[in-house]
Length: 571
Image (cartoon, rainbow, N blue to C red):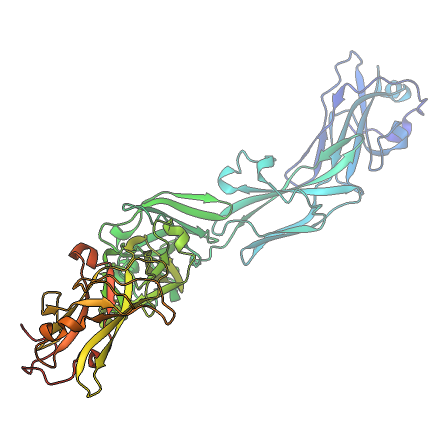
């Protein structure tokens, strides 16, 4: 029953006890706000409820607030709009034996409640993958809390702080959400936050369902990390997660068909294009900070190069991403350094998968990794095949060294190095000699002198023999007659056929040795022929000595040889 409010007695501001009940609010089917409270349990026959409100502060008297209703029912409808963010409600109870007596009595505070106005004019929609919201708020609203709840969690996720977004912003006019996953549906809820007395209260949520459009985008930044030192190495793949769909990865020995990445195609077309189901990797994918990784992928046996193609799948469509590849360089095997007079040639088996081989030099026994900081010599496979090996333009150090051989392949303009192979170049004594003919005043050949030189300081000279062959250039120490030799100094000792020159120098350079005049005519019975100097050492030692012959003209003695043969003819 509705009561005429003009008949209530004036409030005398007597002492009041705290409210016994709470005013509840809900919206009915017409969107009106309906307030209710529990009926008073007193013995009075007549009970009149005065529902009053204030949008500024909590009322302190029933006749100093906005009257919503005066009724004997324990509920009322309020169609008045909020003027501020918070509304304070009170129910004052008048009771007595009759209506007149109840209205004439002093009221008591029976129930109270405080409520925050909902966000108004809410509009939330998707705009090219972003979710944009706008609304209006009333004065006194401190901020608007926004919740993005996955649609599959909407039944139980209302108000769950795990789904709150942009908590650091006030959001008083709206928001832009760029983190929603493409192709998924969400329930967005917005709640006004306002101060009510000493507390912070939230309004009832205003909700809107949004499905973010799906866009099929390829993966273009896949990268690979590999342990190159293991024969059965494993590698990891990493990439950025595209905005929609799922990503699968194909591993193939050959690159996929050209142009696959230009536009989306049906998922069924992948097999026709060479991406077979058995090539799809089944390793689990882990996600972290906007990226994804696939761990512990084995390298297929016998493969020197592997191609990895990411494919984004969404609703039966596929978009092929950027294919990357990885080469696994085999190590260099069977390296050898060949000594060729005054130069060296490096030979080896060309490693599978390598585009070139880098050769570094370092002291014998040095850590191979340290040698990689020195200048390198590089040879490509075509150059190696054409030249038969790596010809060093500078002689290797006579003191010996370690050569570090590193296979290299090229991946997207980047050099990828393989395992290191070490080959030792042993120390070698490099010697040169000169032969000068001695003649009489009449031009007759009376002997020769030999000067042995080395660029190395402080070395011990090996023993030598000077061999004469009347027919051809001597090939060994036994291919002719070993001549008697004496040093070309005053007071020379007895002649010897095996002599050791002094490594030191005289006033005019190294001391030469000359043929013994007393035995010259006996050893060289006929004019002409050739002489040649040999280091007289065991074969296993001789390999560490390089003796460079002078020009052939200085080794030919004057006079015609007894038989015309080539320099390297038979005996």
